[in-house]
Length: 309
Image (cartoon, rainbow, N blue to C red):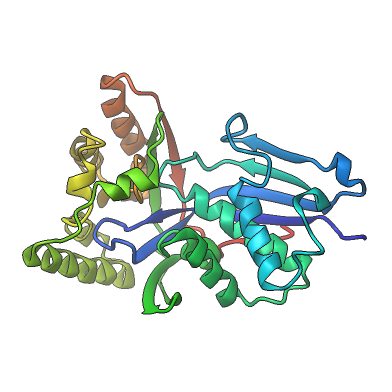
């Protein structure tokens, strides 16, 4: 059984962009990389994880990347042909785990794309993305991981997601990631099951304003447009310095700032000339809390996941 090495690169993603809970997401210029090749001897098959999570991520059937690959093999009736021991797998993670930057989406997207290529590219981009949403449970991270850019995910029911891409803004995204993980499940469980009508209306108006900001490049609207009453006020209980981080970013010239996905990373949008100062100001807030941080100054990724790059 011969096969060229399959290489996949998947971007980090930021979800919600403030008010667009489970709907809006964007891909960023920070990438995980996957290499898969056929293991000539199944007994010597290797599963290597480098970078983020190299000491803690499982290197067996429990790994979500493999689960995504296996889901494709099952869907395409290739599961009798391929098992984990069929491959040498090397995953290089640059996206911090459980940080609100789509690390799980990146893993699942990489696995789906690699397995599809191994099977002869029988699935379309849309079909791969739909499977990714089914595995992930919500579309806001995994849709931009596949499609790139700034995406609106429209749930049509029955696991069908339509995708609308907004113009890609020529601004920077400053990400400040504290040195602790926050499981998405925990961050979602803290949310209420019901909301007041006024809070829903508040968010609808902000999503409309945010869409205008991206479509017209009027980024001065973002400070108001990125406000939210659906998830951030509740998740602030898990990240008490959230508002301080937003205020610090805006004070240094950010157009707006918000929690990235389920957190704990915070993200601010700004001109390139302001990015360094904003990154330092946000890190300083965590330093006062004796929490180490990583900061990233990123662009918006245009293309999403790519193969054989």
